Length: 289
Image: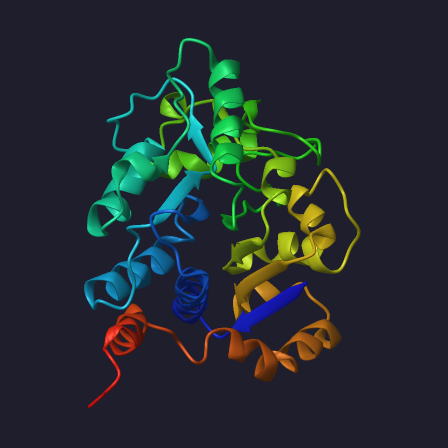
């Protein structure tokens, strides 16, 4: 398990975006080999998405051969509602990059049979070859996706009733009107995310500090579902200083001491321009008389 500690939210977001960029480029995706990326919603990943859009616009990264699977969606909220996760992903990320809309997968919270929709989502992930990198965020109570406290740590994609803490936290997106906040959602399970070959979890802000403490320094506990990723063979937690406020000084010093090694994950920062230049060079015929 890696814990990457950066000074500020903007730096944590940029580090995460650089990591995603390097992973996609090093994977060398193509028409017969798609990179599968799990994605979150919420305010935490916005900075990361902005940097990824910037990389695309600068010609350093392409999403042409990337398939995405989002973590969750509200039940009963119209797809075109400004606070639906379909709208969120389209407005904050997808419409700004070169991804094929057919390669983006978001659960349908208005499906006639919600459990069938969840089962089909699992099948689509399997058909895509599983998820290469699942990026996630957490709530102040340590939930990942909508796997609220008490969720099974081997759970799959399913219908979930939202905890009151989550409803209260999301009320800010609905003008503070609790009556407008959905009370149910479709969500990937903890087990679904655990099946990914790698998981990167973004945790920023002092209000997430106790959850990070539970995830890093205490044991695996279904009341803090993010703690399950202690047992994943390839987990990267990316956080800012504010999120470390509940950690022991010794823990922070230990992980900061590893930053020289962890920095090599994003430095050098790869670009598809270099890949294209390499292909151009290799395609040139060797000199001959």
